[in-house]
Amino acid sequence: MIRLGAGRLDRIVAVGAHCDDIAIGAGGTLLTMCLARPGLRVDALVLTGGGGEREAEERAALAAFCPGADLRLTVLKLPDGRLPVHWEEAKAAVEELRAATDPDVILAPRTDDAHQDHRGLARLIPTAFRDHMVLGYEIVKWDGDLGRPSAYQPLADETAERKVELLQEHYPSQRHRPWYDREAFLGLARIRGIACHARYAEAFAVSKLTLDLGE
Image (cartoon, rainbow, N blue to C red; front, side, top):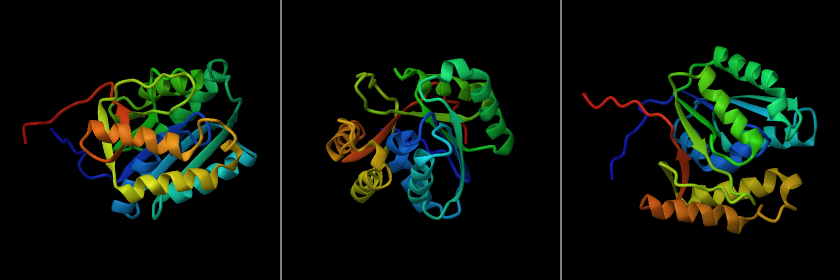
């Protein structure tokens, strides 16, 4: 198995259409990176949920998922489920984020996610971040849209468990959802772990990757 690292990580960007998207899709990876690199700068953008309970949940959750990091979170108030008709506002937010940081890695939704908000945000990212590694995270849901990911981040057992604990602790508004439970989150992580010879992992889609194998 070939393992290609991203080199030194000083700055990352994490984006989500909704509060909890980042944590569900890449919470274990955030924990892994932030614990390994105290002071890592994390610029996070969420397009919906601002100004209410959901924003409060997101701020507390991402603070826990990014221990020791320089976290800078923006939560906007675009309407949930209506991103396609708010394209200009979403694009402006992504471009403003790009002007504020030059990240080493971007965590974003997958471009083939079945949810229109996730998919729309994913397609906006490369219009502003043209020369960056984008890892498209996956979110298990009723659409049945999980695919065949191309990149994996193994998770230590305690990291996978901690991710589930934080999801349950910080997003009480989501606990009623039939898919929002320990079994679903750890089950997917176990399946992705099998694919990369680990017990647990998070998986990502990579649409474009530039290699430098000459050094």
